[in-house]
Image (cartoon, rainbow, N blue to C red; front, side, top):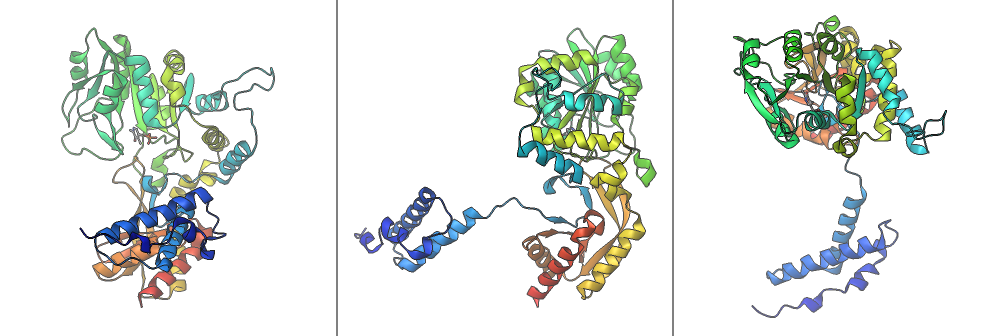
Length: 455
Ligand SMILES: *Cc1c(COP(=O)(O)O)cnc(C)c1O
């Protein structure tokens, strides 16, 4: 290899002295690192026989990196997909009141773990426990970081080293790496498969019970449906069997739906209060699915197993943070006040009358002034509830050829604010049901801009 004229490159200090890199608002140590990175890459390029970059190009390159570092990557988007609880878009939006509670608790200090009456140490759980018991009819409640943690904690605290019976139709993957057999293995409990994928009978559970059995775990089919030649045992039957044989009945419900879904023309979604009534010892659900609150894992059920979970070392590792706890408390209060349909955004979206959605879709169409159509469609509940079920909706469709529609969708995603729609065969679909009306103008502007960029 010939000797390389690395000396042609400016020094770190010379680049740092460039006026364009002054007042950038980047920490000086970080800026120096960026300059070093850029120079290192330039040296490598030269070693590969490329022409040494001009000083100007090097400065530009540092600037580019600095700007990339400085702009936040996590930002709000407009969800026009029509999927109400969209995991990739952050699941449930919070009510105004829940946001205010979060802010208040995070802005200053709070009585998170202080009993104000006695001045003694209190429990963060006290802020939601009685609310959860009132809402579900359970004796006790415990809240942790998320539902995956709730299930893991229960299995570790109550079933470690022993057997847990799970129907073969329920030893499933919920998504994002949450697979029932793996969670069981992590907890130290042993999975015993029961029945078959499509049909599991009570006698299958009965025959699988042995001296090592600790619990029966039921897992709600959150994101799939087994249809046709199917048999499942009811929770009541399972509760009776479990209690006759001294076992715990654990019910992983997933979505935490406290309201009756059938009033919106949806299929019945099992509710925590129904599971408690049916005799489940512990019921698990997420805070940010159909409950419509913050990320949280909620456990309701009998006091004794809940106490055992509370005392387990994992409980501290998976505890809920104060911001989510504050939002959860206020979200639960919406249900206790009977105002969930009006205040909790996911329920407000589910309950918005078709007429209202259609009017907004027509308004969007008019304001966008392009060849669009308003079509009937379905909004999805999503988030591990009611798979395959939809709420009748009206969407704005922007028809076009495949490549064009894909490019339009990408431009919309990359705009500010980003707008996320969904692509159906021949059109980009935008569903007003999942867009708060106060974002209508932003959405219209974004779509007009994205369409114009294309011309
Ligand atoms: C969503 C879901 C989980 C995981 O809940 P996270 O709150 O996301 O951790 C577990 N079990 C079931 C049945 C679910 O639907």
